[in-house]
Amino acid sequence: MPKTIIKIRTWACHDCNYHQDFDVDDVALMALHFPGVEVGHCPACFQGLTENKQKKRTLMTRQTDETKKTTITIMGEEEVEELEVDDTSKTKDVEGKFQKRKLVKAEKDAYKQKIRDDVVKFNLMRCEL
Ligand SMILES: [Zn+2]
Image (cartoon, rainbow, N blue to C red; front, top):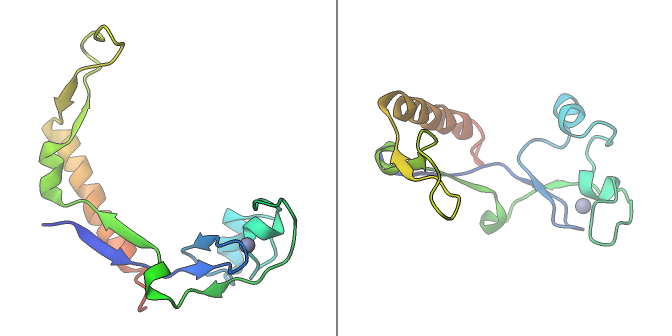
C-alpha cells in the first residue's frame, strides 16, 4: 500500500492564520482542547497567543480554499520495512549516539496497525464530508 494523502476538514482564523481540524462550534471538543475559550472563537486570538499578544475575539470559519486545507500524509505499510530506530541495547558511539537498527516483527506489526488506524481515522475527517 502506497502513501495515503488525505485532505481534511479545516477551520481557520483569518486574523492570525491559526488552523484546526475540528469543528469550532462543537461545544464538547472545544471544551476538551481549549477550556475557557468561547465556542466559535479562535483559541489563539482569544488567549492572546498570537504574535502581537493581544487578546481579542475572532470568529473562526470553515476553510474553503483547497490549497489551505490541512493535508495529512500517512506512510505506506511497505515503508515500515525501511524504518530504523535507536538500538538501545548497544553502547553509544563516540558522538554519544546509538547505532540504528531495523524494527523487529512485533514493532513492524504495531506500526502497520497504527497506519491502518490512521487511514480510517483521517478518512472520517475528509474535507468533503
Ligand atoms: Zn486567530
